[in-house]
Length: 335
Image (tube, rainbow, N blue to C red; front, side, top):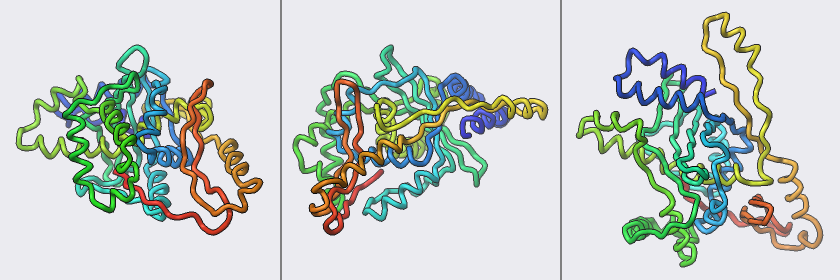
Protein backbone atom coordinates (compact mmCIF):
# COMPACT_ATOMS: atom_id res chain seq x y z
CA UNK A 1 0.00 0.00 0.00
CA UNK A 2 1.12 3.56 -0.67
CA UNK A 3 0.57 4.52 2.97
CA UNK A 4 3.12 1.91 4.09
CA UNK A 5 5.63 2.68 1.35
CA UNK A 6 5.41 6.44 1.81
CA UNK A 7 5.93 6.46 5.58
CA UNK A 8 8.82 3.98 5.25
CA UNK A 9 10.38 6.08 2.47
CA UNK A 10 10.17 9.27 4.56
CA UNK A 11 12.07 7.60 7.41
CA UNK A 12 14.64 6.03 5.07
CA UNK A 13 15.29 9.39 3.38
CA UNK A 14 16.01 11.23 6.64
CA UNK A 15 19.81 11.36 6.11
CA UNK A 16 19.40 12.67 2.55
CA UNK A 17 16.60 15.22 2.90
CA UNK A 18 17.18 18.84 3.97
CA UNK A 19 16.02 19.43 7.54
CA UNK A 20 13.01 21.57 6.58
CA UNK A 21 11.77 18.97 4.05
CA UNK A 22 12.19 16.04 6.43
CA UNK A 23 10.37 17.97 9.18
CA UNK A 24 7.41 18.62 6.85
CA UNK A 25 7.36 15.08 5.50
CA UNK A 26 7.42 13.73 9.06
CA UNK A 27 4.16 15.59 9.65
CA UNK A 28 2.74 13.88 6.55
CA UNK A 29 3.80 10.46 7.91
CA UNK A 30 2.24 11.25 11.29
CA UNK A 31 -1.04 12.28 9.66
CA UNK A 32 -1.16 9.05 7.62
CA UNK A 33 -0.53 7.02 10.78
CA UNK A 34 -3.33 8.81 12.65
CA UNK A 35 -5.83 8.80 9.78
CA UNK A 36 -8.72 6.47 9.06
CA UNK A 37 -7.30 4.71 5.99
CA UNK A 38 -9.28 3.57 2.93
CA UNK A 39 -8.41 1.90 -0.37
CA UNK A 40 -10.62 2.30 -3.46
CA UNK A 41 -11.16 -0.77 -5.61
CA UNK A 42 -11.32 -0.51 -9.41
CA UNK A 43 -15.11 -0.28 -9.68
CA UNK A 44 -15.19 2.50 -7.10
CA UNK A 45 -12.46 4.43 -8.95
CA UNK A 46 -14.39 4.14 -12.22
CA UNK A 47 -17.66 5.28 -10.64
CA UNK A 48 -15.99 8.25 -8.92
CA UNK A 49 -14.48 9.29 -12.25
CA UNK A 50 -17.91 9.04 -13.89
CA UNK A 51 -19.34 11.27 -11.17
CA UNK A 52 -16.43 13.70 -11.64
CA UNK A 53 -17.83 14.55 -15.11
CA UNK A 54 -20.85 16.22 -13.47
CA UNK A 55 -21.72 19.82 -14.30
CA UNK A 56 -21.19 22.64 -11.72
CA UNK A 57 -24.90 22.66 -10.83
CA UNK A 58 -24.89 18.92 -10.09
CA UNK A 59 -21.75 19.24 -8.00
CA UNK A 60 -23.25 22.08 -5.95
CA UNK A 61 -26.41 20.08 -5.34
CA UNK A 62 -24.33 17.22 -3.95
CA UNK A 63 -21.58 18.96 -1.97
CA UNK A 64 -24.07 21.14 -0.07
CA UNK A 65 -24.66 18.14 2.20
CA UNK A 66 -21.12 16.72 2.20
CA UNK A 67 -18.93 16.42 5.28
CA UNK A 68 -15.67 14.64 5.89
CA UNK A 69 -16.74 11.40 7.63
CA UNK A 70 -13.74 11.50 10.00
CA UNK A 71 -11.53 14.42 11.09
CA UNK A 72 -8.59 12.89 9.21
CA UNK A 73 -8.70 10.28 6.44
CA UNK A 74 -6.30 8.75 3.94
CA UNK A 75 -7.67 7.42 0.63
CA UNK A 76 -5.53 5.67 -2.00
CA UNK A 77 -5.89 3.59 -5.13
CA UNK A 78 -3.86 1.99 -7.90
CA UNK A 79 -3.32 4.50 -10.70
CA UNK A 80 -3.76 1.68 -13.22
CA UNK A 81 -7.44 1.68 -12.22
CA UNK A 82 -7.62 5.28 -13.44
CA UNK A 83 -5.87 4.25 -16.65
CA UNK A 84 -8.56 1.59 -17.18
CA UNK A 85 -11.22 4.30 -16.86
CA UNK A 86 -9.26 6.68 -19.12
CA UNK A 87 -8.98 4.01 -21.82
CA UNK A 88 -12.74 3.46 -21.77
CA UNK A 89 -13.43 7.20 -21.52
CA UNK A 90 -11.33 8.01 -24.59
CA UNK A 91 -13.56 5.65 -26.58
CA UNK A 92 -16.47 7.89 -25.53
CA UNK A 93 -14.64 10.96 -26.79
CA UNK A 94 -13.21 12.18 -23.50
CA UNK A 95 -10.17 14.42 -24.06
CA UNK A 96 -7.60 14.19 -21.25
CA UNK A 97 -4.96 16.91 -21.02
CA UNK A 98 -1.42 16.09 -19.89
CA UNK A 99 1.51 18.07 -18.52
CA UNK A 100 4.88 17.68 -20.23
CA UNK A 101 6.69 17.35 -16.88
CA UNK A 102 4.17 15.02 -15.19
CA UNK A 103 4.47 11.24 -15.49
CA UNK A 104 1.80 8.70 -14.46
CA UNK A 105 2.35 7.33 -10.93
CA UNK A 106 1.81 3.76 -9.77
CA UNK A 107 -0.38 4.64 -6.76
CA UNK A 108 -2.12 7.86 -5.77
CA UNK A 109 -3.36 8.89 -2.33
CA UNK A 110 -4.93 11.85 -0.56
CA UNK A 111 -4.60 13.17 2.98
CA UNK A 112 -8.00 14.74 3.68
CA UNK A 113 -8.35 16.71 6.90
CA UNK A 114 -11.17 18.79 8.31
CA UNK A 115 -10.26 22.35 9.29
CA UNK A 116 -13.45 23.17 11.17
CA UNK A 117 -15.54 21.44 13.82
CA UNK A 118 -18.25 20.33 11.37
CA UNK A 119 -16.02 18.74 8.74
CA UNK A 120 -17.19 21.17 6.04
CA UNK A 121 -13.84 22.92 5.45
CA UNK A 122 -11.49 20.30 4.03
CA UNK A 123 -7.79 20.29 3.21
CA UNK A 124 -6.55 17.82 0.57
CA UNK A 125 -2.89 16.95 -0.07
CA UNK A 126 -2.13 14.50 -2.92
CA UNK A 127 0.73 11.98 -2.61
CA UNK A 128 1.90 9.42 -5.14
CA UNK A 129 4.53 6.82 -5.92
CA UNK A 130 6.50 5.96 -9.07
CA UNK A 131 7.43 2.31 -8.79
CA UNK A 132 9.57 2.37 -11.95
CA UNK A 133 11.63 5.24 -10.54
CA UNK A 134 11.51 3.93 -6.95
CA UNK A 135 10.47 7.40 -5.79
CA UNK A 136 7.70 9.08 -3.80
CA UNK A 137 6.17 12.53 -4.18
CA UNK A 138 4.11 14.76 -1.91
CA UNK A 139 2.35 17.86 -3.23
CA UNK A 140 3.65 20.97 -1.47
CA UNK A 141 0.33 22.79 -1.91
CA UNK A 142 -3.08 21.87 -0.54
CA UNK A 143 -6.53 21.98 -2.10
CA UNK A 144 -9.09 23.63 0.19
CA UNK A 145 -12.77 22.80 -0.29
CA UNK A 146 -15.63 24.49 1.58
CA UNK A 147 -18.82 22.40 1.46
CA UNK A 148 -20.64 24.59 3.98
CA UNK A 149 -22.84 27.62 3.31
CA UNK A 150 -22.60 28.98 -0.21
CA UNK A 151 -19.96 31.64 -0.63
CA UNK A 152 -20.50 34.71 -2.77
CA UNK A 153 -17.85 34.68 -5.47
CA UNK A 154 -15.71 37.81 -5.59
CA UNK A 155 -15.47 40.00 -8.72
CA UNK A 156 -11.89 38.79 -9.11
CA UNK A 157 -12.98 35.14 -9.06
CA UNK A 158 -15.75 35.76 -11.58
CA UNK A 159 -13.41 37.69 -13.83
CA UNK A 160 -10.81 34.91 -13.60
CA UNK A 161 -13.33 32.20 -14.48
CA UNK A 162 -14.76 34.21 -17.38
CA UNK A 163 -11.24 34.85 -18.67
CA UNK A 164 -10.55 31.12 -18.52
CA UNK A 165 -13.82 30.25 -20.29
CA UNK A 166 -13.11 32.79 -23.03
CA UNK A 167 -9.73 31.18 -23.62
CA UNK A 168 -11.26 27.72 -24.05
CA UNK A 169 -11.19 26.35 -27.58
CA UNK A 170 -14.33 25.87 -29.67
CA UNK A 171 -13.88 22.10 -29.37
CA UNK A 172 -13.96 22.28 -25.58
CA UNK A 173 -16.94 24.61 -25.64
CA UNK A 174 -18.90 22.10 -27.67
CA UNK A 175 -18.01 19.34 -25.20
CA UNK A 176 -19.03 21.42 -22.17
CA UNK A 177 -22.66 22.29 -22.89
CA UNK A 178 -22.96 23.91 -19.47
CA UNK A 179 -20.70 26.74 -20.67
CA UNK A 180 -23.64 28.01 -22.74
CA UNK A 181 -26.14 27.79 -19.87
CA UNK A 182 -26.41 30.96 -17.69
CA UNK A 183 -27.67 28.90 -14.72
CA UNK A 184 -24.70 26.53 -14.99
CA UNK A 185 -22.32 29.48 -15.30
CA UNK A 186 -23.65 30.94 -12.05
CA UNK A 187 -23.21 27.51 -10.45
CA UNK A 188 -19.66 27.52 -11.80
CA UNK A 189 -19.01 30.86 -10.08
CA UNK A 190 -20.37 29.44 -6.80
CA UNK A 191 -18.27 26.28 -7.16
CA UNK A 192 -15.16 28.31 -7.93
CA UNK A 193 -15.68 30.33 -4.74
CA UNK A 194 -15.66 27.15 -2.67
CA UNK A 195 -12.38 25.81 -4.02
CA UNK A 196 -8.99 27.36 -3.36
CA UNK A 197 -5.40 26.33 -2.81
CA UNK A 198 -2.68 27.32 -0.40
CA UNK A 199 0.49 26.28 1.37
CA UNK A 200 0.01 23.87 4.31
CA UNK A 201 1.27 25.53 7.46
CA UNK A 202 3.81 22.76 8.10
CA UNK A 203 5.30 23.26 4.61
CA UNK A 204 5.94 27.01 4.76
CA UNK A 205 9.63 26.50 5.56
CA UNK A 206 10.04 24.38 2.43
CA UNK A 207 8.75 27.16 0.20
CA UNK A 208 10.80 29.83 1.95
CA UNK A 209 13.96 27.80 1.28
CA UNK A 210 13.35 27.41 -2.48
CA UNK A 211 15.47 29.66 -4.72
CA UNK A 212 13.39 32.40 -6.30
CA UNK A 213 14.27 31.34 -9.85
CA UNK A 214 12.83 27.84 -9.23
CA UNK A 215 9.58 28.81 -7.53
CA UNK A 216 7.54 29.57 -10.66
CA UNK A 217 8.08 26.12 -12.19
CA UNK A 218 7.44 24.33 -8.89
CA UNK A 219 4.23 26.31 -8.31
CA UNK A 220 3.10 25.48 -11.86
CA UNK A 221 3.66 21.75 -11.31
CA UNK A 222 1.96 21.79 -7.90
CA UNK A 223 -1.05 23.67 -9.25
CA UNK A 224 -1.25 21.20 -12.15
CA UNK A 225 -1.36 18.33 -9.63
CA UNK A 226 -4.23 20.01 -7.77
CA UNK A 227 -6.14 20.94 -10.95
CA UNK A 228 -5.92 17.31 -12.09
CA UNK A 229 -7.54 16.09 -8.88
CA UNK A 230 -10.17 18.61 -7.77
CA UNK A 231 -13.01 16.99 -9.72
CA UNK A 232 -12.03 13.52 -8.52
CA UNK A 233 -11.82 14.75 -4.91
CA UNK A 234 -15.23 16.44 -5.11
CA UNK A 235 -16.72 13.25 -6.57
CA UNK A 236 -15.00 11.21 -3.83
CA UNK A 237 -16.55 13.46 -1.16
CA UNK A 238 -20.03 12.99 -2.61
CA UNK A 239 -19.51 9.22 -2.77
CA UNK A 240 -18.35 9.11 0.86
CA UNK A 241 -21.57 10.94 1.81
CA UNK A 242 -23.91 8.92 -0.41
CA UNK A 243 -26.41 6.35 0.81
CA UNK A 244 -26.37 3.91 -2.11
CA UNK A 245 -23.11 4.01 -4.09
CA UNK A 246 -20.51 2.24 -1.97
CA UNK A 247 -19.95 -0.25 0.78
CA UNK A 248 -16.97 -0.24 3.13
CA UNK A 249 -15.27 -3.46 4.21
CA UNK A 250 -14.20 -4.38 7.71
CA UNK A 251 -10.72 -3.30 8.74
CA UNK A 252 -7.97 -5.49 7.31
CA UNK A 253 -6.33 -7.95 9.70
CA UNK A 254 -2.54 -7.67 9.37
CA UNK A 255 -1.68 -9.27 12.72
CA UNK A 256 0.02 -12.37 11.26
CA UNK A 257 1.85 -10.38 8.61
CA UNK A 258 3.13 -7.92 11.19
CA UNK A 259 4.37 -10.70 13.47
CA UNK A 260 6.43 -12.06 10.58
CA UNK A 261 7.66 -8.56 9.71
CA UNK A 262 8.62 -7.94 13.33
CA UNK A 263 10.83 -11.03 13.32
CA UNK A 264 12.57 -9.70 10.22
CA UNK A 265 13.00 -6.25 11.75
CA UNK A 266 10.67 -4.68 9.17
CA UNK A 267 8.23 -1.91 10.07
CA UNK A 268 4.61 -3.13 10.51
CA UNK A 269 1.90 -2.67 7.89
CA UNK A 270 -0.99 -0.30 8.51
CA UNK A 271 -4.57 -1.46 8.62
CA UNK A 272 -7.08 -0.14 6.11
CA UNK A 273 -10.64 -0.60 4.86
CA UNK A 274 -11.64 -1.13 1.23
CA UNK A 275 -14.23 1.08 -0.46
CA UNK A 276 -16.21 -1.01 -2.95
CA UNK A 277 -18.93 -0.20 -5.43
CA UNK A 278 -22.33 -1.39 -4.29
CA UNK A 279 -22.84 -3.39 -7.46
CA UNK A 280 -26.14 -5.02 -6.54
CA UNK A 281 -28.02 -1.74 -6.41
CA UNK A 282 -26.35 -0.36 -9.52
CA UNK A 283 -27.24 -3.50 -11.48
CA UNK A 284 -30.80 -3.40 -10.17
CA UNK A 285 -31.26 0.19 -11.38
CA UNK A 286 -29.93 -0.69 -14.83
CA UNK A 287 -32.17 -3.76 -15.01
CA UNK A 288 -35.23 -1.70 -14.07
CA UNK A 289 -34.36 0.91 -16.69
CA UNK A 290 -34.67 -1.68 -19.46
CA UNK A 291 -38.14 -2.94 -18.56
CA UNK A 292 -41.55 -2.07 -19.99
CA UNK A 293 -42.11 0.25 -22.95
CA UNK A 294 -38.51 1.51 -22.82
CA UNK A 295 -37.67 -1.14 -25.42
CA UNK A 296 -39.58 0.95 -27.97
CA UNK A 297 -37.56 4.12 -27.32
CA UNK A 298 -34.60 5.43 -29.30
CA UNK A 299 -31.50 4.46 -27.34
CA UNK A 300 -30.06 7.45 -25.50
CA UNK A 301 -27.66 8.01 -22.64
CA UNK A 302 -29.13 9.15 -19.33
CA UNK A 303 -26.40 11.02 -17.49
CA UNK A 304 -25.57 10.08 -13.93
CA UNK A 305 -27.11 12.47 -11.43
CA UNK A 306 -27.60 13.03 -7.72
CA UNK A 307 -30.96 12.97 -5.98
CA UNK A 308 -31.13 14.72 -2.64
CA UNK A 309 -33.85 13.23 -0.45
CA UNK A 310 -34.81 13.67 3.18
CA UNK A 311 -33.03 10.42 3.94
CA UNK A 312 -29.76 11.52 2.32
CA UNK A 313 -27.83 11.83 -0.93
CA UNK A 314 -28.38 9.19 -3.62
CA UNK A 315 -26.53 8.69 -6.93
CA UNK A 316 -28.28 7.45 -10.08
CA UNK A 317 -25.64 5.87 -12.31
CA UNK A 318 -25.55 6.79 -16.03
CA UNK A 319 -27.32 4.21 -18.18
CA UNK A 320 -28.71 3.70 -21.68
CA UNK A 321 -32.50 4.07 -21.89
CA UNK A 322 -34.30 2.51 -24.86
CA UNK A 323 -33.25 -0.17 -27.29
CA UNK A 324 -33.79 1.29 -30.78
CA UNK A 325 -30.49 2.16 -32.46
CA UNK A 326 -27.30 3.19 -30.63
CA UNK A 327 -26.88 6.05 -28.17
CA UNK A 328 -24.89 9.07 -29.44
CA UNK A 329 -21.29 9.56 -28.31
CA UNK A 330 -20.46 12.40 -25.93
CA UNK A 331 -17.24 14.35 -25.51
CA UNK A 332 -15.78 15.62 -22.24
CA UNK A 333 -12.56 17.44 -21.37
CA UNK A 334 -10.82 16.18 -18.23
CA UNK A 335 -7.94 18.11 -16.70
